[in-house]
Length: 379
Ligand code: UDP
Image: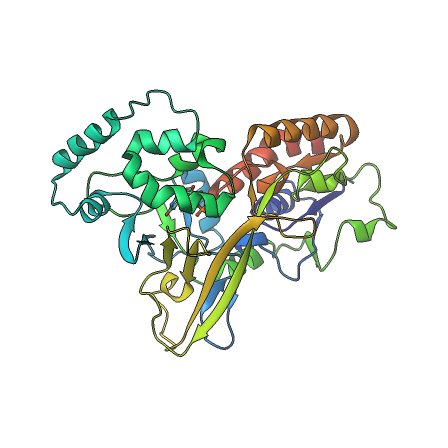
């Protein structure tokens, strides 16, 4: 009988476990060194405030893939939350992503959509960047230098500890720019927060009698009982960690969260407030209760101040740092994987070194099941 061991119980690992158990009808073991499943998407209820919080920072589910939405909806219902974000710059609050409200408030104007469009075009003409090569040029080519300097430059440096000219343009294309008052952060077809939280969603995803979950279990701890050679291993941790950093370390960003609880019904009036100024050391504040407007108010609140820094060995990796050097190192690890780890499939945000959103991770897992796992199990 084929044996499958999945290392890491985030979306990539959990969806593959579910598919292998339910669709292929095979037993599968999932291990995770944490004491909970769900990876960085995990949420639970805080005992002292009664607020459901996202332990590793805000996670808003959004997708335009009907396949992903249908799949995930088998394990949870979603509320009707629609994400909007605000940003504080020099002690004033603006709407984010940049839209007509942000433009008018920043320039102290009352422009219509077409006037704002013409105004920004004039701004863009000053630099005339036709082929942006990096994050800074891309942002300036979309919104002009003044808005870039105010809302993007310092925030990006805080988040990545890199000059925006060293970062790829596509990081910023995650954010739309709009010449209307539409301030929705995402423009996907489907959006919401799991009604009973992410924790319940993962518990259901893994509640199959062919799936064994072992928490608090590190792959390295299993060395004595090394998996048999014919075991298919699905590794969703960092690829450099799998090879014990043999070729060097990939750069990762990690987060530190400063938690605060208040006997207040509302701290900041929104789920996320970004801080654009360099002088404020954190990038943003999350106030989790606003993700569940449908729940009864406990009169208390819990906030996380988010600080971003480079991960050291032993820190939790969150974001891959998409520079040329890291991409090249990752490619060398992929070569190593092909020659030295033929029985291992690498996947997920950490295994693929990709800035995946949750729906990307699910889509990648469904594709991996169809295109890689099924043929291997058959062979
Ligand atoms: N960004 C920014 N100012 C903001 C929000 C975002 O400069 O107020 C930039 C920043 O470079 C960030 C990128 O836009 O890395 C993508 O932001 P997003 O909110 O998608 O990041 P995530 O929520 O995944 O951390």
